[in-house]
Length: 372
Image 1 (cartoon, rainbow, N blue to C red):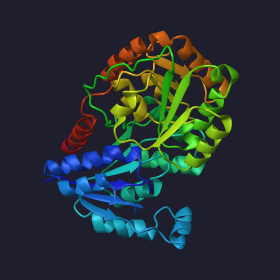
Image 2 (cartoon, rainbow, N blue to C red; image 1 turned 90 degrees about the horizontal axis):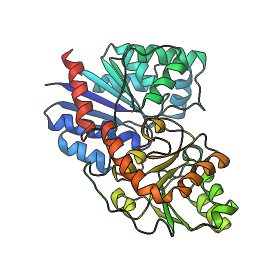
Image 3 (cartoon, rainbow, N blue to C red; image 1 turned 45 degrees about the vertical axis):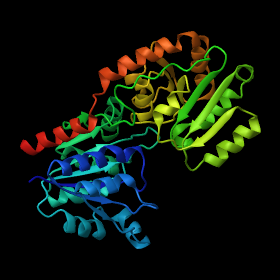
Image 4 (cartoon, rainbow, N blue to C red; image 1 turned 180 degrees about the vertical axis):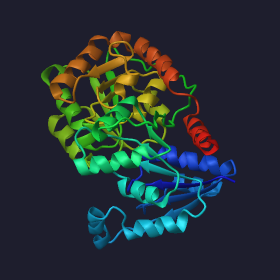
């Protein structure tokens, strides 16, 4: 029996947790022994309960004390991490470390590496806004270079990580995240694009990363105020009330429905995705919108360019500024009679990029490492 330990380094639960949690569940259902180490969450997570029901042993780490957090800044291997690993990693064949961002898991990577265990790393997000110091870059490079495999969700995140480390990652590999719509979904095109354009911005309401402020300020420009446009900001997050206040202040036609589990229902009534992000890995919302036959208007950050072909299946803004996002949205408005055709191209293109079963693909790659 193969034995796995999954360590999720993220302190919250978001899109970064989908791949590792579904993979742990699948491995347990296939008969492997699976242990999962997660941070304490503020509410029960149904995904963790599914993993537990499948046979995974789930362990909630205690939140480090202030002293431990201060020590973590000085010592690469804090005692609480060593002791936690010692209690869970006995006879483990492979450790899977899942990071929300490039720096999240460094202490865990160093702890696992020092223990001599075989490990892989999943990186969901990398940012040009956070460049590691020389010391941190050298530590990260050593940790990633010694991994059996380093997984990245886009070519862009792999390339940026290598630039930040200053080395080529011999074990680097691009993987796909599982999605939350049917692979064979085919939604009717919503009526009325020529009368009122319906746009949806799907994602965490987190302005520094997702850039919803750019979108609101763009729609406040005089020429957009004269157009019939309906915007839905789907999601919740730390800036929800601030965005609501700003939309009211500007008098914009914006709906805030909160988090929506049924993504297909969202796209049944919207013509295109708008995503003015300042940073991304590979946005799952782009994959899902394209699978549903909807073109995307997005900034050229992260892996967006790997899926969005400008003026063919969507529109790319050169940077997350009002001026440049307005330019991309203007092109979408001028081509609104083509949006259905572009959505059909998006649906074809994305299925060349992602398989029906990304979780199974990832689990099979883990198995190949076990066999090697």
